[in-house]
Amino acid sequence: MTILLATIPASLVLGGLGLAAFLWSLKRGQYRDLEGDAARILFQDDDHPRTDPPADRKS
Image (cartoon, rainbow, N blue to C red; front, side, top):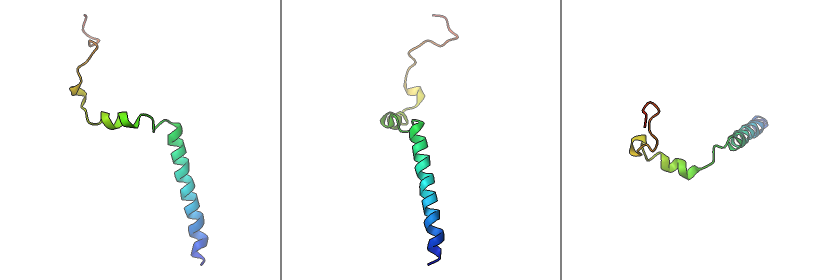
């Protein structure tokens, strides 16, 4: 029974830390545009042609 005196507060602290981490990531915008990030990982940068000329060349 005395083990509950240690595990219940420890689980509450760990749950609070998890909630704080989730709220922090929510505030920082980590969950914006999830579908865009999921689709972006499927393409390499070489697959898309550049639309703007490189800065070192003159047009």
